[in-house]
Length: 257
Image 1 (cartoon, one colour):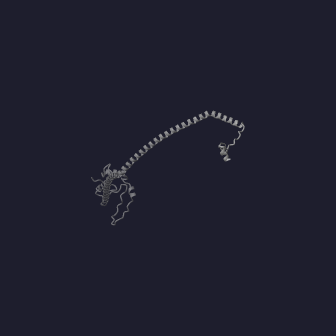
Image 2 (cartoon, rainbow, N blue to C red):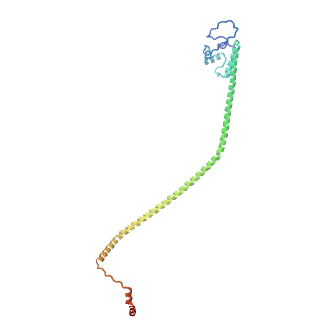
Image 3 (cartoon, helix red, strand yellow):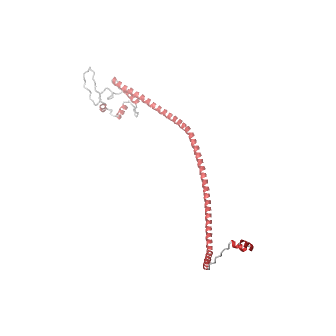
């Protein structure tokens, strides 16, 4: 990559918005610099203030390719190229940039390893799931097959029993219907015969009624005649002795007398 001019905030030159510091005499003592906060550093006026300006700046300096995603590997590569932009860059700055680049590279390797592990785990899980599912289905079918066969046999036996019960019930109902029909016919015949007998009795009573009336009148007439006639004298019934005396010879009569 061809050398480029130092970048504001990256090279040794001061930012454009700040005036150059006043010249001071060399200080033999080490001074302590108070670091600025992250918010102050981000808010300081600069050419790069957001992600859009960042991408434009990196593209203009030939540090990245257009439309390429900023992965950890890509960012670490950019940092390594930044260390080669200017020979005037202080060694501590280059070392700090390289340290961050190596950390990003390490994270890149970790991410690749994690992605490979996840892919491998997913593949193994899928293969294991398919194998277990297949074996589980086979074992389930093998375990349930006898029960299914028993249930099928029991259902067939139950269906056969139900059909026999239905046939028996149908036969019984047919016989009962026939017996009821025969009994109804016999009852009807008996009722007809009884009705005919009652009718004949009524007709006989109607025919005998005049004769009975005539007989009753004659009985009443005879009763009237008996009541009006004189009383019949009472006859003395002869005794056995008198009858015997009248029929025996005289000698015997005398002897007995």
